[in-house]
Length: 292
Image 1 (tube, helix red, strand yellow):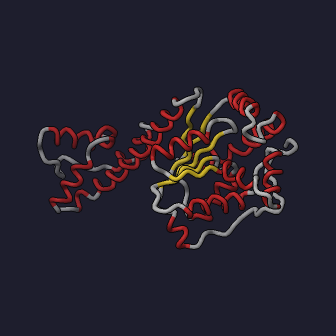
Image 2: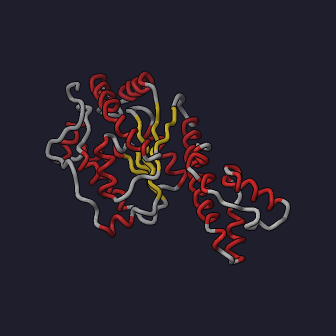
Image 3: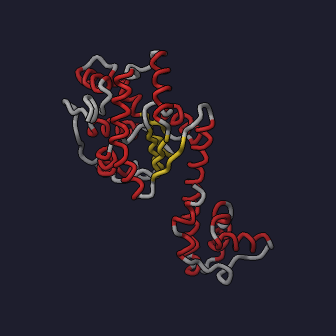
């Protein structure tokens, strides 16, 4: 492992205890989206744009760390030294910083957490501390050449203290070494979504928006599928009408049951048990992955 690469320990905590149950419960309902990618891939700007579009609370780990590093305290100096080495701040402190900011938000629909997790211990520790996994993890794929070019341009503008040749190489080495176990972890949970970033401007934002909208449609499909599986157990006419209304939109496009129901409704006929025979094979995740 190259010098300066990896995770610096110092006096910052390596781990923390799980949140109290009432605090965990506060973070169970909101949608949580993680966005990760190499240095200079554009996480920060895309995170802010997406949070604004979907009215989510934005948490940028890099921004929070740089704010802490600017404080004239011993902790601030420790974090600043770690950043200047191109290494990672210990997971325990990162989780404290993240959960404190998430818990400050009131009545939010969801969170865009940008720049997290950066290594596998952070990913697993989040699930232990918060009591749940994220809903989706977006990986911004960007070539090394493009990231280096952007970082060097940014260094000329003097925006960041860690945008210099030696530090850039350490940051890239750290990212490529530590990110693969993270990707594998979320891939096994079917939460990982890769988005290639080859352009600047608004093009990546449009691609990301499409992926998130597709994921939201998939969630709607699963809810509709669950209600359909309850169809035969209900003899309540209002409930039948509610179910019939749900058989439109993405669900109608994605599975045979939805398509059949949509055809029946277009003829002005009532959708009933004789027409709908739910089969679990229609509701497997692979069906809905087609739109992602």
